Length: 476
Ligand code: ADP
Image 1 (cartoon, rainbow, N blue to C red):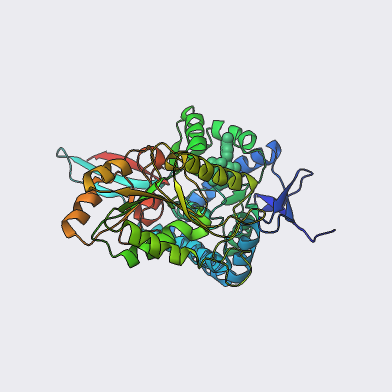
Image 2: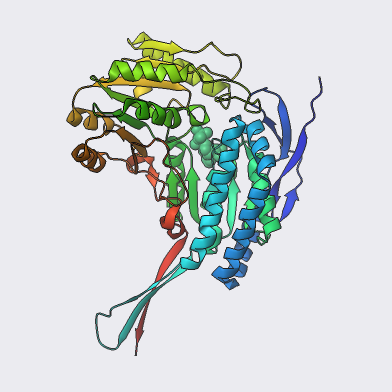
């Protein structure tokens, strides 16, 4: 059988990189190849670095208004290509088309936001400590940036790094996920069309991330690393960044608690969980991983939840009506099945499971009676599996929610005003959804505490990640 496959390229200094080394991109729904991509090697990396360094000098000459105008055009081009980008993402990542369309808009939203924020890189005049001195700060771009991104949001995880970098005046070298390089390449082409300087956004595709990234992290030219991915890889990259003392922004794993208190509106809480759990088939770092439900509403909550979960349609993301696409690859499915097995073997009860699925597809599953002894409690499952834990008092559920090393997103449902305030303060998480299951957007700061990461993306904080403060002390 032959399949039509596209040829794509790594993108170095505004040009497609030609190479014999090819990466095959697989559609996780059909498990068939959809494209081959010429990979970047050591020579490509060196050229990209040199071009980025030269580009930094060019970018320094641009005003923030000029960079804002380029970003505004990029924003328009992304929106103008919404249908094609969404279909491409569906094919290489598997998410349902409706979610892919939403991601194109979400991704474009970061570009629009940072086009606006580009003009607001204000420094300060500081009231002086002594007569005859004027003190001030100015904001300057940090320099060449290396970005490493995951496959679960193939567009948005890139725009929310590249747009603020460009707004600040930093050239960007991207190493996208080997699972989803096509979306990254499509974005880079649109950026060039929008007026990005040829080395302001370069894309190095590889199936050997470790080998490609090592010299970039060792290089003093790269002044900043911005990473989204697993905590384990993030820790290694932090260690490798130490030698050249790079600035780092790290968006790492979560293990989000989702707490339903006794005063909660159960119907609203179920609706919130459907979003917080099943978006992208459960493959998000802010996905509800541990669902704590108060004993008073436990049974009613589970009944209402199963009602909704039973309506979810699993299938190819391109098919109309699909709610849950395939998992990204075989390893992801094996891991999820194994976590469910382990939970069942240790006493969890499977209260719902959809029809078992072939290939990389996985049936939505609901488990109750999950405990801290089970692996599923401690690991991100990244699959359409709900783990329910019953609780009876606020103090102990907050302690349980905080008992992990992760601190990215948390959610809780309550109608008790004093409890809302207490729990909002007590949760050791970077983001908290209060009676809300969908919290990510370009205007709000996204990021985690503890081992979930360093720094924030989006919002006004997102621009600061790419700026240095320079303090000027003038005697007069
Ligand atoms: P995920 O579970 O989302 O795939 P990973 O942390 O494995 O998370 O991958 C996120 C990104 O990090 C991907 O682009 C991947 O290629 C890259 N990556 C994985 N391992 C390494 C490594 N040792 N060095 C540099 N990059 C890596």
